[in-house]
Length: 368
Image (cartoon, rainbow, N blue to C red):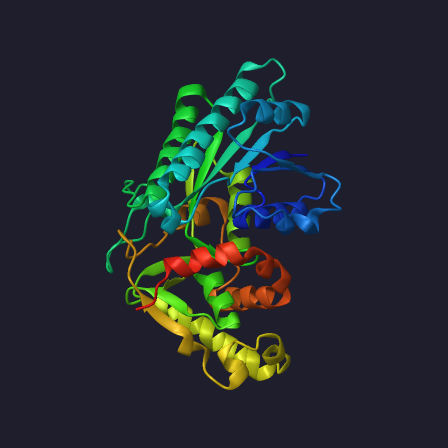
C-alpha cells in the first residue's frame, strides 16, 4: 500500500489526479494538502468524501512544522507535488506570488522531506518525491523546430516559467546532493474537468455559454500541444510506479493546435450541442445559439501579452518507450468530454466565476 501526500490537490490537475488514484488504487492512503488560494477549490474533491483512505488538510507547503507532522503521523512515503501558481498572465502582473510558492515553497517542502525521510531512524525504506512541472521551462519553438525533449536546454521566458525552472533544478539538486529519491515530469497544456476558467479552453466555453466576448491573443497563431488531464494522470502514475529515480519524463498529448483553431472548434462544438439539445437555449439564454446566431460571433482579438511564447511541443518518446505511456484521448474526444462535463457541472463553474473574479478576467482582455 502506498501512502501519498498530494500538494495542491484541490487544484485542476491535482484534483483530477487524486480522483484518478482513488479509482485505480482504492486501498491507498491519500492526504491532500492545499492552501486553497483562488485556484484551489475544495468542491473539486467532493467525489472523494466517502473514500476511507482520503483526508483533506488546509495548509501551506511552506509550513514545515505542518508538513513534518503529516509525514510522520500518516507514515507517508510518496509525495506528488502539484502545488504551484500557474497562470502566465498573473505571473507577469504579480510575480512575487510565483517566486514565493513555486520556488520557496518547493524548497521548504524539499527541506522538510529531506529531514524526515533521510535523517530520521523511522524513515521509510523507500520513498518518492514526484515533482510536476511544465513544458514552458524549455522556452519557445519556431515552426520547424523539433519538439522539446528531456535534453532541451532550459530557456524560460515568463516569471511563471522561470519559477518552475528554478523548482525543477532544486528537485534535481536534492537528488544528486542528498540522495532524495525524486522524479520530475514536464507536461504540455492540460485541459479537462475542474479546469479553472482563466485558461484558454474553460474560459472560452464559459464565455460562449454566457454570451461574453471570447478573447484571443494577437492573431491566434500561437501553438500548443494539448494533453487531456486524465492522460496526464496516467503518465504520472507510470513515472511513480515504474520510472527511474532521478529521471525526468516529458508527458505530451501529441496534439498540436493553434489557439484560433481551438476556439473555432469550441464554437462549432457548442453550436452542434445547441442544435441537438433544445433545452440548452432555455438554460443559456445569452449564448448566441439560443437566438439563432453562431457562437464564433463572440470571438474577439485582443492585444498580445508580453513575451508570449509562440509554440510548445512535447516529444514524449522517452516515457512511451520506457514506461509504455500512450494518450488514450485524441483532442476531439477530449474536448467533447470537457464540454460535456462543463454542461453537466454548471454549479461548479458558476461558483468559481463569482463577481470579483469575473471583474478581474474582464480587465485583462480588453477587446480590440
